[in-house]
Length: 235
Image (tube, rainbow, N blue to C red; front, side):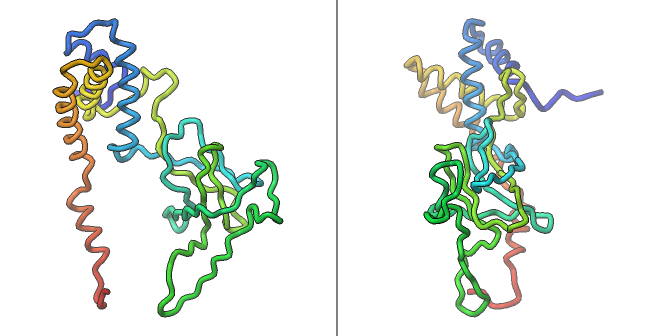
């Protein structure tokens, strides 16, 4: 016999809350908007496994454009030997002021010449794969010092996760109780209800359960510890 799905749409989340809480259908659209906000907050601050990877072409002025569903930056990476290598954020990068062309006389787009050597006492902080600078105000990321043959990079980011219909967005069933109390708490807070404090406590209780599920496993922690072991002295 097939088991019930571990996913629910936001529409189902809101309908379940209205049924269990004996609420009015008049509350549906207000609750749906709060559910959308609650799921976005969960993706940003609490849930693992909801990152998105997008291959982006680097423009002639050494930028990539942020996608429409972009919420928060994680990294710009390039693939090396089956793993993603992160480019380093560097706030001092000079970029195109016109947004049309690069003026090398003003240092726009000039590759960073961070030289390095391998000897005793050398410091790190040099990324020979490249650098980036966030320019969210102009909906872009500046890219610098990429290999000459590379014309694209991969953007790892947190998406809104909400489709255009909103109601057809799927969420894990495990976070539904948290979303329910998020909706009730925020609704009570906005209406200055005396129950807001009580509902906040219930929301935080459900949030703690979600955070527990997101914790690294004992095996993961063990593997991290083992990766730091060495037979040579460590300073």
